[in-house]
Length: 217
Image 1 (cartoon, rainbow, N blue to C red):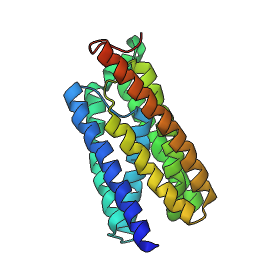
Image 2: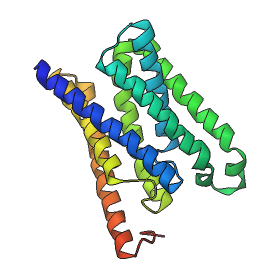
Image 3: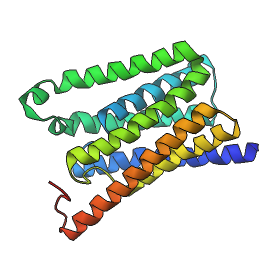
């Protein structure tokens, strides 16, 4: 059983690392941010908070602690792509004017939500439960980003598939622990991820047929 758990943790870590690394690569290449702002805020808050907790409160230097710290650093680079290119995502004069203020508001809000989860459920349970709830929010945010951009800009099937697998593997782990909350939220996230993968695939196919032009107006 422990071997299976370690394999699942390893697969999840590799997949999420691929999501972040490809988001950074594509973000700078296409001059865009590959992660929705709210998803980015939730990630930075979760990984920053729990990497700090692992290293300086629990004095834990295990695999998960190291992974959280690495992911937090990668998140910073994704945040740089948002600060560098994200203003173009904001529509209208008001959006352009309040870009920095809106970004700060989102980051502060997501951090406060993560702290509330930790305060209410503890650092162990809060870490697990908030992760799955925010993954549902992230999956929906990616779908919205695809619809709003009306193209596959800043989105790759590698990111979509690895995000899906990266969440599915701990869902299996939760099922082995008979944790109904993780199982149900994991399944919900998996469904939204499959919808996103299919939708992104269809958009990319349509773009190829249109010679690289946007798939829909």
